[in-house]
Length: 313
Image (spheres, one colour):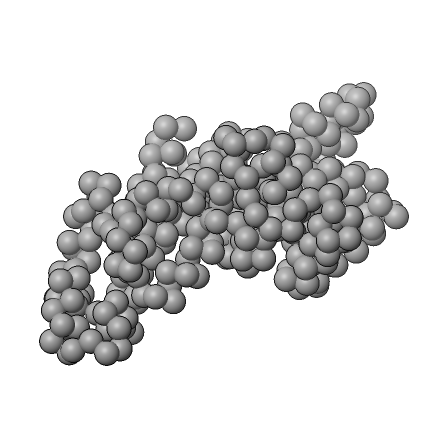
């Protein structure tokens, strides 16, 4: 297992390096006149050129990337070109918001998908058709429309939850729950639609296997067969789909954070990308990649624990 984890960590480090280089290259292609944006449209050209030189924008892109990478590996992500904030501190204050949102979505998606998928896979008939209909509806309905309906119903009409704003977990646990519930709900619907279908299909496939019929013939209780044998072998496809859903959630969180007024890295990405603030954007890219690698590592470890044959892949 240790060799398995080491291989996954090495692959994640290579992925982090490749994406950081490609991101820096793509951000440098559209040559934004950052100096002009900072000093204003009426600034003299020599002052603009001096500002761009101060930021290092007159140097070749590979040299700038090498300088950024040398500082990044030491934990120095630089300062924002537009606000002068320390990038690590600015991202660090917003990361817990997005992290709590993502963790909540993953937990809700995993729990609800497991219940619906197992229910549909074991109790074929009306239950199965109902879960399939819910899955199709979850895929078909646009995410922004679902989010707006949730806000109108639960925040505006019923007044059960606040429509916008965020309360930190350290400030008030009830306040945090009230501000995070609707965003988690809106992001979880599409994930439940996909993962529950994978759980359903995997459970049905495993129940058709010969060894399950043998276990039934030996007189083992259905609950023991389900929880000890069926779910263990059906978990891998569901975990893989859940990890893929997480990648999509990071993109969807941008819209959700904007709608609910959450000060997370999703809304931060929109603000700083339009400015062309490369130090902040690169930090956000790295945080996103690290989150994706970490989630995939956890999923790979779980799959390797459930299925030892997967460790050799």
